[in-house]
Image (tube, rainbow, N blue to C red; front, side, top):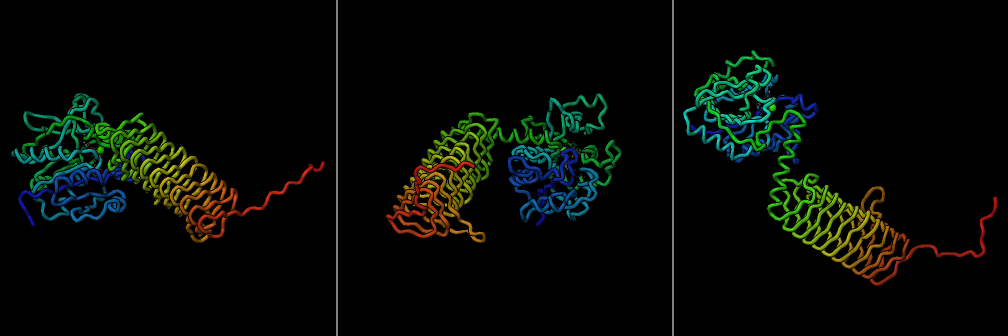
Length: 454
Ligand code: UD1
Ligand code: CA
C-alpha cells in the first residue's frame, strides 16, 4: 500500500572494503559480535521503515546470507561497484516506485544511534528540502567528504581525494547518512558523472543537484565513525565496549581493569559483581549479584547465580547456580548444570553433566555425560570414560558418595547412593547403595629385593 509519507531505507553495502585487506566483505566484519551491516539494519529498524533495500555487490551472496530472513528487507545487486551514486542509480532503476522518503545509510557507519536518525527525519519533515544529511566537526577530518555551507544550505561536498589544500582544511564532514525526497532524487540521479580522481559516481554529487540541501550538524561522540580499515574497526569496538561497561558500572558493577575486559551487549550483570582483569562475558550471559568473575575468565551464554567466584576459567552454555567456586583452570563445557554450593577446582573439565548440590570435583578430572548426586566428593584425577569409540555413554553416581583418587568409570555405569570407590579403581560394573567398589590388584611386597646388577 502506498502512502505519501512512506519511509524506505537504502543501505550501501556493495563495496569490497579494499582498505580492510581482508577476504571478508567489509560490512561482514564484526564489532562486539555483530556484523557492521546487521548493526546498521538494527538501528534503522527502530524507525519502523516500510521497506529496507540492502545494496550488495562484492561477494553479494555471502553478504545476503548473513542476514536472517526479514519480510521488510530486499536485496538489490549493484554490479560493478562504480561508487555510492551508482549504487543509488541501480536502486532507482530496479524499483518501480521511487516515492516517499529515502533514508540512505552507509553500511560502514555501524554505530549510528536511531535517535540521531529520527532527528534527521524530523529536520527533513519540518523544512522544504529535497535532501537533509548528517554532518559533524572532526578535529582530524582525514578520509571524509568535506561539507561546504552557503547560508542555511549545503553548497557542495568534496571528497578528501578531490580536495585542494584549502578545501582540505574544512573540518565539517559528511557522515554518509542522508534523507532524500526519493521522487526528486530519481529525476536527477542519472545525471551524476564520474569526473573525479577515483573515477567513481559519487552520491555526494547529488546534493548540488537538489533543492535546499540541509545539514544536521551532530556532536561527534563516536556514532558517526566510518570504518575503512582495521584501525577504525578497533576504534568502534572500543567505543561500543566503553558504552557497555559504563552502563554496567553505573548499575553497580566494578571493573578492576576495564580496558582488558569485554562484555557483550546482551549480557546482564547484577549489583556488586566484581569483574577482574582480562575477563570476557559473551553472548546471552546473566551474572547475578555478589559474584567475583576473573581474572582471566571467559563466560559465554551461561547463567551464574548469586555469590559465585569464578577465576581463570572458561564456561560455555551452562547453568551455574548460587555460592559456587570454580577454578582456577576449570573448563565447563556446554549443557552442564552445577547446583548450589558445589566446588569445581584445578584442571577440571565438565561436559554435559549435572552436579547436584554441595558436590566437589576439586582436582584434575574429566566429568562428561554424567549425573552426580548431592554431597558427593570426586577424588583427584577421576575420569568418566564416556566414549566407547562409537557412542557416548552416561555415568551416574548417587548422593553422599566418595570417589577415590584416580578412579576411571567405564560408562555406561550406574552407582547407588553412599558408594565408595577405591583409589586407582577401574569401575566397569554398577554397584548398589552403601557399597565399596574396588578393582585393583593387591599390593605385593617382596622383601630384601634388590635390582640385579647388569
Ligand atoms: C563516503 C562518502 C563521504 C563520507 C563517508 C562517511 C561518497 C562518495 N563519499 O566515503 O563523503 O564522508 O562515506 O563515512 O559517498 N558502496 C557501495 N557501492 C559502491 C561503493 C561503495 O555500496 O560502488 C558502499 C560501501 O560498501 C560502503 C559505503 O558505500 O558501505 C561507503 O563507501 P566508501 O567507499 O567506504 O566511501 P567513503 O570513501 O568512506
Ligand atoms: Ca567508508
